[in-house]
Image (cartoon, rainbow, N blue to C red; front, side):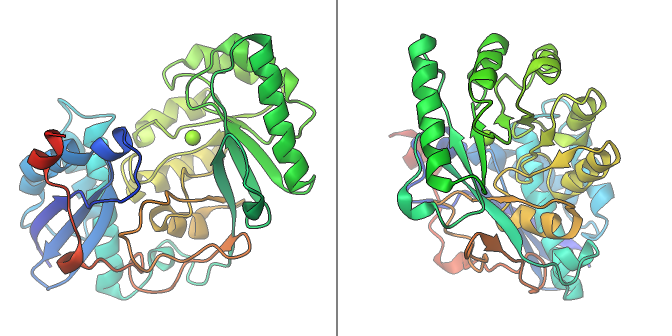
Length: 352
Ligand SMILES: [Mg+2]
């Protein structure tokens, strides 16, 4: 089997937020072959990611054997080295890599979870990420919850933050998990103060309190913060995670398979983290692209709810009563109806 084309588009995602998550949003990558099979993956980077696929990655993949995924990943990494390594180029490679894995599954009539050694994985518990507060109707639908928190202003801001976290804890009771996410907006002192303040609310982790590059800050938090620190959503490749694992900067690692280099890299991150005794809990793991890896590789699985505007990937399993299960369809078990898929037009979009 040989690769005959590599295509990328950015599907219209109604209700996606008017920020980088749309302007540099999720792209669909299709890898066509001379067998007639096409594999699909999702990467990031919007039009910048599409440009990398069309002008660089496609050229190095044409006529290659799509089953040599490790070699093709290295080829893609090398071909983008001058401008890649982290960020948009790796987000683009992620989509291609996932398409190659989907193709491997479709060609062998096996699910990706089966390819990874787990043909009949069971149901996986889910957690739901919410902003500011928890709607009552959600309180019974997941096994854990994560609350996004803004940067608080002064002591009054920290008091208000405590109240909002305490309110969610009261709504969900003592038996379910509760975590918080700072999305890189705090600093070391603030995180320590908040960590102390929240310490009676059984918070499972504080996520990304600092910039991903503030390794010294994370080292200090590891020593002094009473609540475990999670991170890695904005880190790239197993090389990037290697240093975090070696210095044990995070208690929980959260690679995003559609950004960090694809499934090939997620597998390596799992291997290295598990060897070091560090938990992996992939970012938005209930989306199908991570779910097969969680099902097959994870010893303590917990899948984060996906992006509600990612509706154009059909056939994804639903979350029912706080559980989600991979299907055994070939590849990722999803369907893409390209004939009925509105895609963004860069020229039109950039004029708005
Ligand atoms: Mg996060």
